[in-house]
Image (cartoon, rainbow, N blue to C red):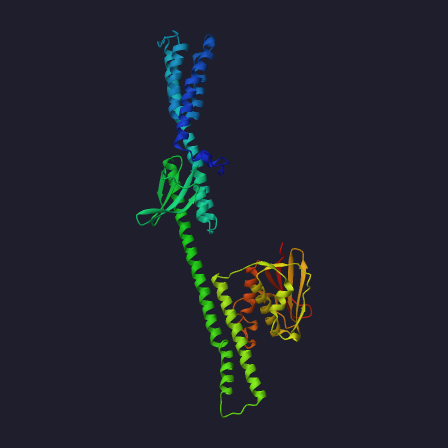
Length: 473
């Protein structure tokens, strides 16, 4: 299994500090192996020169080897090495040789002192090594916790905490479980799916548990794991709160849209209905003899009000489809000048000037949506333009740009974004005869076709709306 490579504050991999039980056993067996291999080797080297060396010098060499073994393998191999060294020194280097008897009193003192010093040094070295490892572990734990707590709680904070646990402890899989009835449900997972045999299970809070599959850990590591479990629980709670906040914002937007819709129904839809009702009531009056000219004017009022009512209802339905995400888009290659011609049907000829070349490449768009986009942009431009609205198009390599240009008062650049807000009229003036949906629908339809709608000032005054559409390949 791959070990974690993230370094701690001292530059060492955390995997070497957060060692498993198998790592400590390996250290023990390595130390015992050094005892078995190095002590006989040192003895073989010293036996030929024992007559030229003092016993104290030989014991110092054995002491050096004991210290190295204690550093490598810990206290148990160090003590075994100390006892083995004194037996070897007694048997091979203390007269009479090849016996455990000691002739001189000084040699007895030297051997006893050697044992005491060797054991003491082994214990001291092991304690120092343990403290060094504990200090390094504490620094690593502090660094891990600091990194988790200092980073902002983003939408993927829970995944980051689980990845941190997995990398730090060398786990295969780490998961946050939540209690659902009688079973545990995986709320978040880092690594491959759980196999059902976690080596650790740490309670977090409110029925949450952090489980991991991999090598077993020491008790010291479980303390850090408990803190990380708490961090995972907090990240999960933050995710839940973020979801609730997003739902609340969505409900607020829906409520705002509903209020605006009610306002539109209360005023803008009532206006054409009132015009129709007044004209029809006038025509039905039997005590009034309407002239043909007056009858024609009343019928024109009915027709204009009905058209206006139809446009308002169509815009409201289109906006509801956009808000609900139920817009159906059928993109296919289209001839742009035909779409523009259909979009401008019914508009006065002197109100719009069209300059769309017939040799433009085919555009990839939805015919019905594109017609509605152009019609809405032209209708919006006519409300404010002092001259005829100009509709043009040009080829821009991989895209075709359709421009709708008016010569009205224009819109400040800081209000460009506000123009596309549903139910937002320029200057919030309801006298312009719309509910403020035309531009919002135009942008929504354009983006649904993978296009873009951008406003810009018209040279000499006014507003230019540019629709960018991809060229059909």
